[in-house]
Length: 315
Image 1 (cartoon, rainbow, N blue to C red):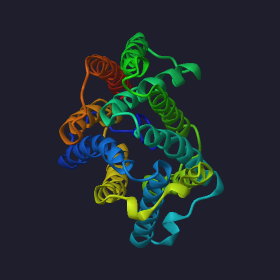
Image 2 (image 1 turned 90 degrees about the vertical axis):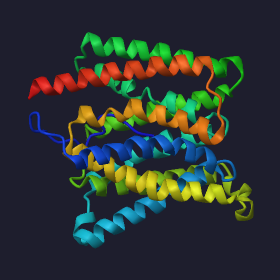
Image 3 (image 1 turned 180 degrees about the vertical axis):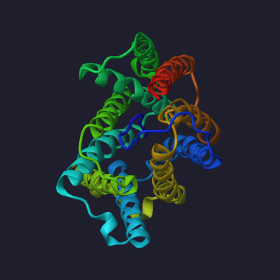
């Protein structure tokens, strides 16, 4: 799962030329994060949901923190209590609740549909901004309303019973939690190094997944002998490519590219996810998924484009 306006943004210079490195990093985020929905679906075929998420984030967080410490020295990974609290709060909202509910839901919800349901995160962020007093233009409000229509259409498979409605609801709650974590992270004391912040988020979010997994008794049904090779490979992909490469590329983009350009991943990721789900897992794309997905993507395009115009006007 991903988010728009996650907080480690910095003021940007007016209308600078977009470098090749930015486009490469953006392409990585497009493809890598779009493919994680498929990888999660494959992992949960033979592994307990939250235990697999805990392994993913704890390992990825430890590797990222270790890499920063080796590259920049132990002092680079030190944070104060407020920064650790911020990382912990964001990590729980984004990874334990947001991604955790997604992982559980993908046991019954197709990866492409899950990605389309998550695509509304930027719209929830706009609503949270409005609730907290930030003025939103009519175009953004219209985009949110349009997105809610798309969300209703995407819910039809669950209402009709072709997909478990419980899984659809879990994805929606997870997406809202991700939006809250993304928005709230911008209001709290942040760690200067985005990679260090990401590492602590993954470590604390992973611990949260582990605690909930143990409380659910997932360990009682976890037998290494029953885990398939493709689930192990998918988990390795999530750790090294989805978390390390994806998070690193995204964190770098937030500091080196216009946020409006970075935010375009929000309507590219679901397209990639739907295509990969159809190609690899033969997931069917019904009329409601197609129509609802197009509506949601159009709504996110409206919101992201207004964000880009506002920031351009400010410069």
